[in-house]
Image 1 (tube, one colour):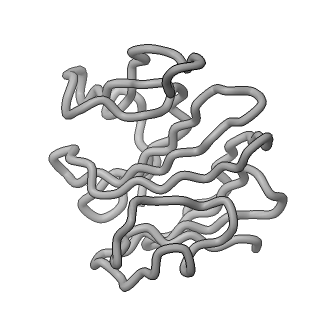
Image 2: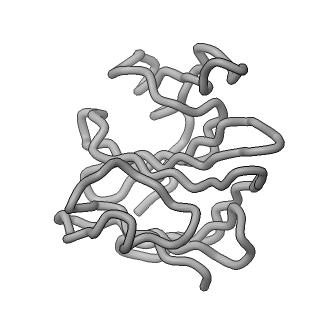
Length: 151
């Protein structure tokens, strides 16, 4: 597991959030734009784990900031996106610790640490039951990103 530099993978803002839409950014891998745009305005951190990248983006909306955690494969295709946020709450992202081989801790909102496990193989996941309060994701019975809170 390794924190990567913005020269390897970064983002460029396409448009900021407004009353009608969420912020949108494009991915830049080794200086070249790749893939489809992703939601989020501020590149917070990116970690390479196994054969994938885990990118943390925030929306830069002061009264209701959202953290988006993207998992991309080695070819920078989106494999999963998990969001943390709640109405009228805001957070400040701080990456705390990389824990080999596949975990990290961070702060965002809700007090205490969040732990993220990046799974090598998809794990069974029950929508609406398997995640802590404030976490949302697309409906799926499997996940590569397991969040725990509070620690």
